[in-house]
Image 1 (cartoon, one colour):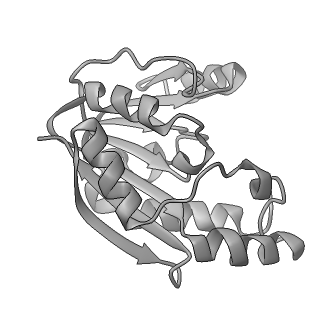
Image 2 (cartoon, one colour):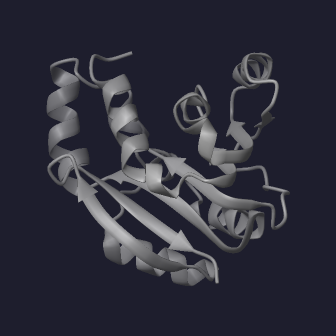
Length: 185
């Protein structure tokens, strides 16, 4: 792991902390850090990861939680109206079919549920990330893994396309990253 990767992950969770509550679905859950740091606000948790071996390890580490192996670009989320909150931290920029994934997210959300998304901005992705990767502050592999970079207008359009609304948007880390909160009516 690159020098600042763990630090950056912690900052992303800190930015969306006020929204973590109730039954939580975390797409791209990685090590399920949210359970360790914000578990008192969570009444139920399901983490989704592409790696079957990671899902197996997490299931042993957190037996009270549910973990599902899923390739989000190919596999449909089959959860209906279960979650108060869906977390997508540093994930959406890696997905080829964002609308397909978001349609599954909408089905999984309860009415009034929210999606909390963090993603880099153009500044963070096109300037800071390459410089940081060259200095080994960030993983070099991230340079080639970002499919699309969002801005506020793109979030508005994505939300509208799947029947959600953008209720909050802000930048953090000197405009290098952003938070978007989308809500289901």
